[in-house]
Image 1: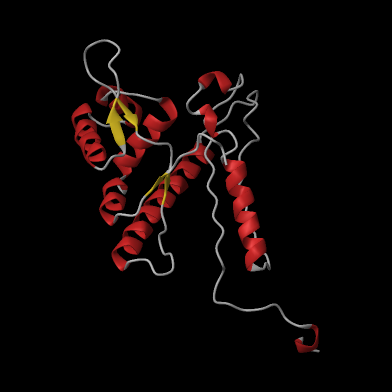
Image 2: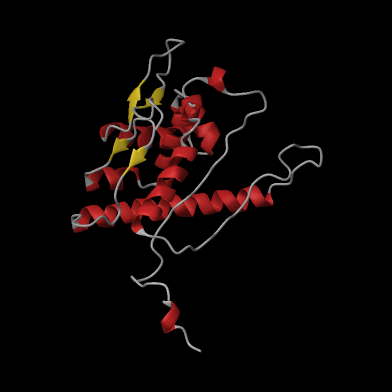
Amino acid sequence: MPTNWAPRRLTDPRDLRAVAHPVRIAILEQLTVRGPLTATELGDLIDESPANCSWHLRKLAEHGFIVEAEATDGRQRPWRAAQTGMQWNDAGPGAHPELAQAGRALTRMLLDREVERLWAAQDRPASPESPWRETGSVNQSMLWLTAEEFDEINAAVQELLLSNVDRYDDPALRPDGARLCAFVAWGIPAGPPESSPVEGDRDA
């Protein structure tokens, strides 16, 4: 894992419910990938009014997701993300029902948001000369795995997706031509427990 990757572990359903809002997630995303921003700057980026952004910023601050940053011009104070990333269990074994429900709601909202981002990307025309015209993909697979193999693949995917997270905080690390890209991945057991057919059990 990257040494500077310090996601916040969400264990309070009140925090999960507070951040499970499309405008607040959009604000948190912009503060994470762009750095400190004012309510006015955020409004321009996510197409919301500065007043609405200010209200959601205060709610995020109440739950510790953002903090005030130093103002550079002595006027409107910007905000910054208090941490990079979040982690939570939306249905872990033994989870409190209220925590599990709040976690699932946040997961569902985030996935809906990423699906909308996918459709928008596919509808966006690319110039024939653009090096990005053939990029992007959608992949799906189902594999017979042991629990150990399943964990290994999930860990490898997570490590790969976090391999360049240090470029958030240090723009100098971004190569020429780099642009912001979104990845979504999950690995889950598909259906109830079952085993693959044994040679002698196959139908003739």
